[in-house]
Amino acid sequence: MTALNETHSPDLISWVDSANEPGTDFPIQNLPFAIFRRRESSELFRGGVAIGDQVVDLVKAKETGLFSDLALSGIEACGGNSLNAYMALGKEWWSALRLRLSQLLRNEITEEIKGALVECLVPQDQIEFSLPCTIGDYTDFYTSIHHATTVGSLFRPDNPLLPNYKWVPIGYHGRASSIVVSGVNFPRPIGQTKLPDADAPTLGPAKRLDYELELGVYMGVGNNLGTPIDLDSAEDHAFGVSLLNDWSARDIQAWEYQPLGPFLSKNFISSVSPWIVTMEALAPFRAQWTRDSDDPQPLAYLDSDSLRDSGAIDIKLEVYLETEKMRETSSPAVRLAESNFVQSYWTLSQMIAHHTLTGCNLRTGDFLGTGTQSGASEGETGSMLELSSGGKKPFTLPNGEQRTFLADGDKVILKGWCSGNSARRIGFGEVSGAVIS
Ligand code: MN
Image 1 (cartoon, rainbow, N blue to C red):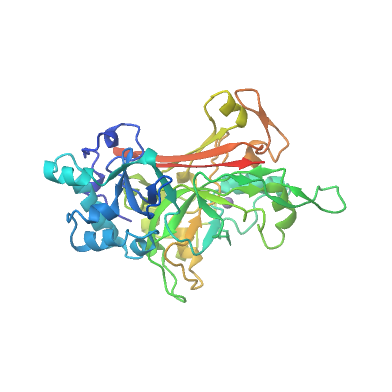
Image 2 (image 1 turned 135 degrees about the horizontal axis):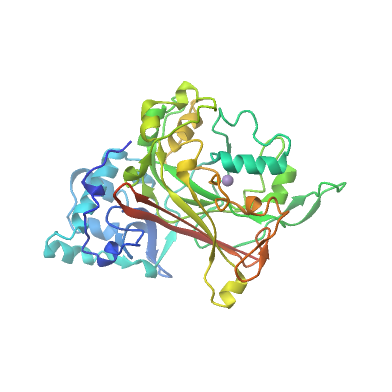
């Protein structure tokens, strides 16, 4: 785990005023990475780091001559239209560039340096994003025991939690080509579905379209085929975390999922937030990881002192829904649920250690979804499947509209942030998308 250092100090103030607003997602303690350009321009996409309501253009910043050594080779690797080259460098480079950016954006820097850097800022309300990196492979896990139990009870009332759940960080290999950055709207997918009492399936638009409230971890440094990553080194390979909405067609899923798992029900689109919050930025929000004494304790390759000490991460998560009617009446999106990744049954390091146990090689840019993050309580449901008890109980929105699953025009917005531990609050921004008819 990354130790706390001067970049995490809650006392740091930036000369970019908006970074000092209490509610900002992007104070100087965060410094997440994205790939951006000015909206509707013909500029090349390039690396940027968020500060307040601005983004530091890393191509321009490099040209100021204010970077040297590892920070220089780091920022040079951020000039292309994906962050893969930078993510492949490793922790020393990530730390060096973070420290240098932190120093240069602090209030006490000289007027001359501020003058040079202010030329490198672009307002975030003038930019558009592309995916932060080329994602080679995407794996989705199933780390919330609350989600697994509730969903299991809908699909298999007699046998909700399968016997492997408490031993294996369950996952499936997903589809990387249909991962998109926040803001992409998409048509309702078509598929085969079969009602329980029907003789044969029918073809048509999915009726049970859903979102999944997830986080994803981007791999930085990969491992060689045949060489597993051990639990305590796992996070040295991880670059950072973003929000993930793993859109799902439940009626397609219910018909197709046995025996090989989700296929078309999950492959039509998955949306990620544009910013990658680095593992180093998350250091102040680490939490103890525990396994209930009534549950089986993990096998040795999934357990360690350092995992127990600080393997979990306190990341607050929220889902908002904005319907067509809300847009027409200028009503704000409504919050459907809140949850927290700290409740996850398996950690990021356990996901990585388990994924590579066989010698499977993870590569720079590979993306590992956590699975839907539902909590133990009502109001902590990370999907509509859970909110509507499998479509059996419609729920009513504040404006009187009812839902069991997503209707055409519905926009889903996921948000996440970390606070507490006497640290400065940092946020993930958001990921949004809408289903269009
Ligand atoms: Mn999922």
